[in-house]
Amino acid sequence: MAGMTARDPDPRSASDPGPDRVVGPDRVVGLAAARRSLEGLALGDAFGERWFPLFREPRRAYDEIAARETPAESEWLWTDDTAMALAIHRVLDECGVIDQDRLALAFALAFEADPGRGYGYGMHMLLPALLAEPESWRTLAAGLFDGGGSLGNGAAMRVAPLGARFAADLDLVAEQAARSAEVTHAHPQGIAGAVAVAVAAALSVRCELTVAAVAEATPKGPVRDGLARAAELPFATEPRAAAGLLGSGSRIRADDTVPFAVWTAVRHRDDLTAALWATAEGGGDTDTTCAITGGIVAARTGTDAVPAIWRARREPLG
Ligand SMILES: [Mg+2]
Image (cartoon, rainbow, N blue to C red; front, top):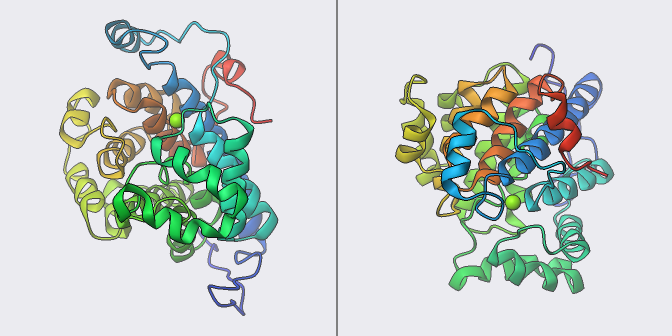
């Protein structure tokens, strides 16, 4: 995006980064993009959740998605993806950048307020402990899953609005995405998934979004390898076939979730409605894949063009 290069001329150290690393007009543009992304993330999350077996058996979900039938329920509740994205959003509003102890507490408070939002196993282990001692994320997150840390898709699902906010500075996007991930996802691939999605959202804002560009900005490893495969996959490929090749979150890992969600976002980067239908077609962890895709695409498009009934049915952000 032209002119989006301003940085604080006197950046502080990573341990005391200070507020407002993006300043001036870039900050205003970033805040508007972050809000659009957050709305799209929540819409994707709530829309994607409708296709789980809890609400309709898989054959019916498949048929309704193929027929583009809007889910009939009058209220589409969002899940942990949005709860955690809201926590990041608030910490960035308050601090300007990711203060990891504040973020740990914000995640813990969100969990305590409503633990039934579909959090994964690791978060049920971690977040109650962080409520009493937020700074203990440093040891507890690294200790999850036999000491490897989580490589799940949870850090990726919540991060698109962060990438949109800092779109003026792609290095800052990657740094802040990693910091947001580390609080819960210590495994390098959990972090890589967050970096990939945040960069994708930033590139969306800048009208520079390609799968190859996202892959190039992603740390080495399986997430990047999956994105590299996605970059070679023609957009004429049916989404269900693409999901079969790339994964669509059935293992709830970053590397089997992020490449497909980024691919559908780029395939429909100007059309949020089409992007969400295509992502739902891939099946798997549909609230998460649709949250990722929605957050990336809406960072640029906003949600105004989706059917009004979708916006009316999605649970408000509060
Ligand atoms: Mg969820």
